[in-house]
Length: 308
Image 1 (spheres, rainbow, N blue to C red):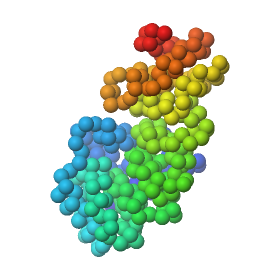
Image 2: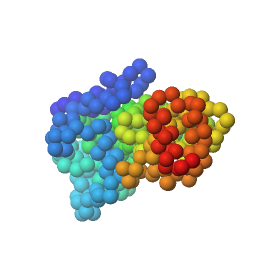
Image 3: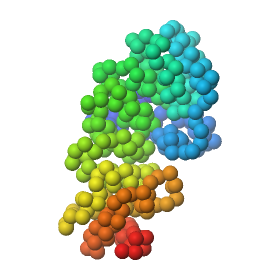
């Protein structure tokens, strides 16, 4: 059996306790690439796009019920044979499409201590990403605060961030937001997007970071532009008489993302309630603060769209 994904992530954490950005060295990469028609997706891309797609991802109820029975059997009788059967099952289905209905069938019908044991085994001892995701989801239903390190470690990899932050919210609700904020600062792709969508702008430090550094990511600025503008109170911040270059650069990222119209499921300029105020303030600052071609083009495009 290949090395467990959890161990690979642990071994590659930096001295600060996070993965190098864009790390994607998982043992099932080639297998996943094969099933995706030879396309190498970035970590978290499949789940992130599925959640933003109108395509139906949920399986019929009777299939989810059958899957839940196999998982329950493993939890109640965790033999090697049952574990192998469960792992084989997860290779056939994407966790994003089965996790919620399957958990609804399982919850309340198995012993929590046994469920936790198998959840930890799936999350920490398997080499298939869908098995790890299901382990994370199950651990969120039965885990304790002492299991937080497992979830945080797995959440450092953008393939698992979406699942980890949901579980973290459930087992350490009081500390979850600060953990998710730290994860967001150390991610750059679909994991960062998941964190920021979930992040509560509960203090000025978070709001300021959302405006300065939140929108920048390796997937596309339009995925985070509106959410950063609203959670960070963009219009209020840049209506100040003077702003610093870093804030202007972050505002440029957000404005450029809001102006993108080719990703229809992302909220754009027309959906941002304070668009006019933010546009007026940004264009005023742009007259003296544009320092590169990207900023100049963003200001020019904004001026054409708003006719300000």
